[in-house]
Image (cartoon, each protein chain N blue to C red):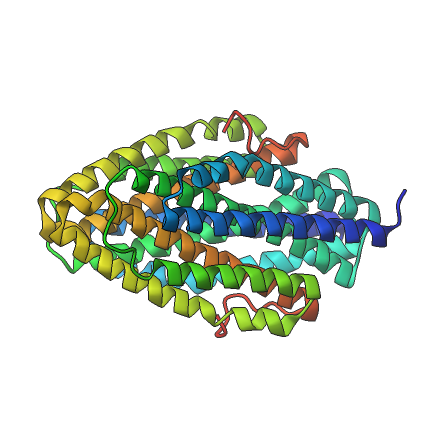
Length: 218
Length: 218
């Protein structure tokens, strides 16, 4: 049997690979939305099974290591953190697919004047995801902490998008379906920011052994 | 130190207690919506910290047991399942709070004619949650399996609600904000059904040791 340290390192690599894949899906879904790129949107939808496969593979590796190695302290925190981060990443992959589906629906209708604060929201959410994964790689609790306050900015932008969307709906009945699609995209980006926050909190727990969820920081 | 079997039993009780609390929050949020009951909606929002506290308590018990007891086979599957079910329950608690907030927003505007298929969706989602928790208590994989096909019914109802809502928005601009609130309630109920499906799948994994996620059944 391989050395435990080597198995942990391989698991670490698997999480990074999945993280990179999910980051790319999220980035492409926003790009497909902005450029009305049907092929790109379809590619994201087709790629989803690979993310699901990665999730199941990581889960079963963690379960096996917990069973065979009886890890303690930091190794144990690492394995339970991986279980949670894995679930968050899979959900972000789902959200990228949801955005791609909304994009396809938007492409098949006439374009709206502009998509308001959505690109700004997307940039913040993607940055949170990237930094939280980077904090995981570097085991950097301070970097993870820097992710937490951005969640409030994303929520503010979501409120702005919602206000704009309601106004469009009330004045341009023909644009109701497209406005709804954009509202859901904003919601999916907000959820992406939430999952990135979860990942950042898991990194803080992993490094420092303290649980910062549901606290004032958030 | 107490016996491991006793600790597992206490953990089991803690999950059931949290499950009961979350079920009640979800049920009350739908009741508050239907009866325009502001006090009830506020109570759900005030109760949220208790759910978050239960989640953190269960997580730390699982982590401690994994560290001290080095469980294998079914005990290990039980502990990893509890970690996941715990996360799903906490999310359903959040969704109940989201529904309560939408309810408060709806109460402060004139009532709409009817709220369409939402009570039916709510009944199905609540039933899925209840059965999946019941399957966990009884360790009954067949009962858990019976939950999975209901998810498609909930999705169908959500599509119907969305169609109704778009029509209201296009013909009654004054009702756009209320229609949006209802659409989000439908979305939260759909997500409740998804989390109940996750719990049911975890029960199947726990009892049979097989991973049924992302499969045709779903």
